[in-house]
Length: 145
Image (cartoon, rainbow, N blue to C red; front, side, top):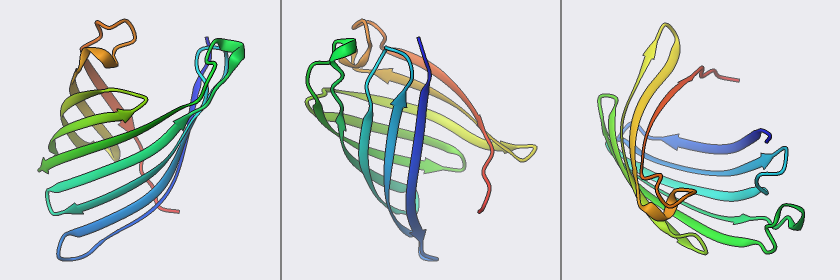
């Protein structure tokens, strides 16, 4: 049906003592006729192995694909991490509703970032109301500008 194209702009820092903070903007844009845009402000704080993320956003309306009004949402996530392993509990709010738990492992292999995650969704988050578990594999390349 089309592609999802994501853009992210952000700034963050971490001190030698382990305290970190970040601010960013994320946009999710779609080609084809399967969804409208999402735009959100992202805030984060962390200390050593604990991080807290809060995002607030808007899902745009697009009457041509049956999304007749915009929706507001927020997202809060708490993550604990150690030596590449992590556990996240996240909650959606406002016009969206649901929560999930994500358990994963991230590492670097041959200069590439790789990861695996198990996700356990509240049934409200699945498109058909029954998509309550997933396994996700990721690969990426990080670089400095």
